[in-house]
Image (cartoon, rainbow, N blue to C red; front, side):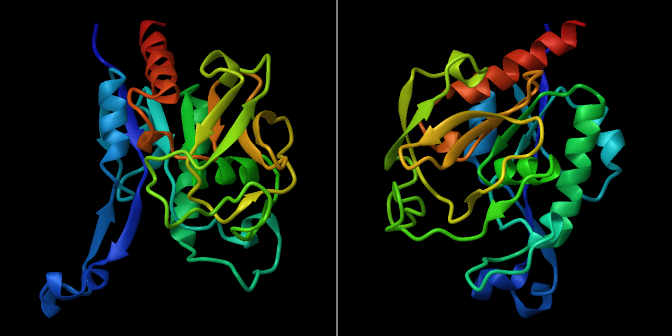
Length: 242
């Protein structure tokens, strides 16, 4: 049987951020950034990873995909959930917001399973009408933005909610990394909370139909093959058979 094709979103930066690693003549050129642990995780779970570009029609791209990963990255623009900008708001990439919102809509329309990670979870929540808390400090609650700790290491625990799709992937309590300074505030309409940190912060969301699984941590950095990627590839493979 053919292996399922899993699309991965990424960032787009000006080459000038690379400083002296590029000549001045190329500083105004843009490059697409995809962290390698995402495709590695998909490949180890049995899928065929493909890094997506925003220079193609979204609907046409999704027609070729069997699964989609919405990856981590910049903060979601608060304008998407009708709030003013907090003073501690990080980098925004509004064009990426627009692109990924369109990808998510196309995936939902074609019943393509979606794994949403960190920023991806936050974007899913916003698309479903939820809001975000735009900044949390390290010393608040369980301690979420652990920027100085190796992302491959667990920094706090989360509790998995029984009866959810996510509970079929993980035991009742797991250790996770924490590479985010924003969290879910109001949960989007129809979304199910699937995991929480010890301080009550939402760490997992999913849809009732089980076609979107979203986690606040970065599973691609944890031990491979990670259960979330195994789930995505399994769902994508089953879709190929229908």
